[in-house]
Amino acid sequence: MMTKNQINEREQLEMLTIDQLVPEDHLVRKLDAAIDFSFIYPLVEDLYSPLGRPSIDPVVLIKMTFIQYTFGIRSMRQTIKEIETNMAYRWFLGFGFHTEVPHFSTFGKNYVRRFADTDLFEQIFYRILKEIADQGLLSPEHVFIDSTHVKASANKRKFQKKTVRKETRAYEQKLQEELNLDREEHGKKPFPPEKFEKEEFKEIKESTTDPESGYYVKDERTKQFAYSFHAATDEKGFVLANIVTPGNVHDSHMLQPLVEKVIDEVGRPAVVAADSAYKTPAIANFLIENQILPALPYKRPMTKKGFFRKNEYVYDEHYDCYICPEGQILEYRTTTKEGYRQYASTSSICASCPVIDQCTHSKGQQKVILRHIWQDYLDIAEDVRHNFEIKEIYARRKETIERVFADGKEKHGMRWTTLRGLKKLSMQAMLTFAALNLKKLALWTWREPSMA
Image (cartoon, rainbow, N blue to C red; front, side, top):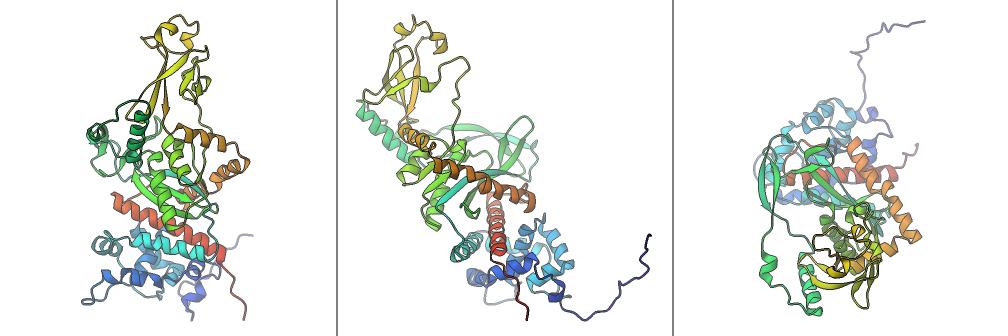
């Protein structure tokens, strides 16, 4: 039997408090119990004048952003609309039924005038991380690193082509010193400083809407301006550090600064796990020299079909040469300024080789193999990869860093951004990852209130 609701209770009068309207197990109660937000006051005290009009409570401002990023609300304008009608959000902010909610532009104005050139959001992120560590929940021995692209607020068709200088990599100075030592050991003259100081340029597409974003190409269908959120997590999925770059910066360039941040703020990990994009000689060198085991996967050789693979040429460490499948020796020639040793065959012998078509198609009929001066570190990483414990650690990437990015995009509005510029995107990253950490802390430490 169909029932029609004939009773209109819209104007029903009740005597109650906001506290009674918020369910006992609502997430805002768990967030409020997880950490005391009053730690924000000393962080911003110097940013406010002792004179003038009373300001909006800075804790309220920060809590509003946590509502936005925790519940995945698309903008501050929409967040304010939600706070106006949502009693749980009002309870979290300490508002009453009729307390006026700040205008949506309030946070933006405070950001421009007070917070833009400070490390406030980084301090908030690490204060929450300290609370997690104090609760004994942090496990930073195994660190998982990756990056994800966040679509920029920019039309991919509005750009200008621009020639820019190639960025300097973190390990550049160390590489220059070691390759010159390698050249001297082989009887070659070291490169003069001006050889390295010569600027190299590349052509990029620069957005006219958001010039600080980077043009990102994944496949024929995925071409857009984006930012890269690089992050490191522990084995429980808590974010330990993050860095934001334009979307066209390669992942491998950011591992060293990211790990250095983890070491400075949390401590030195025993193992760092990352995908094949990070399997480079420079990264293997950095990790092993810092007493960190690399957990890096198998990387398929990029050899043309029908040609011998590089591992079919045997490296003789004692004589510092390569031996080809037909037994010919490829001797050392030079070390390039990119850090690669060149080993070359004798062209007169190669000319009569029966398998030369599987070896090289060079006009000079000479096979050249490149070996990085840090290849030994990469070989160690490859050997370590077969260890059972390292395999288990690497397999946890899908439960840690990949899950963090998946949750961030599906539930916390990290798939795209309405903000522009690296500073604002760094703020978004810090607040999003802080919200993810705080949410996990709140859920793991929540205790049901005891009955009186």
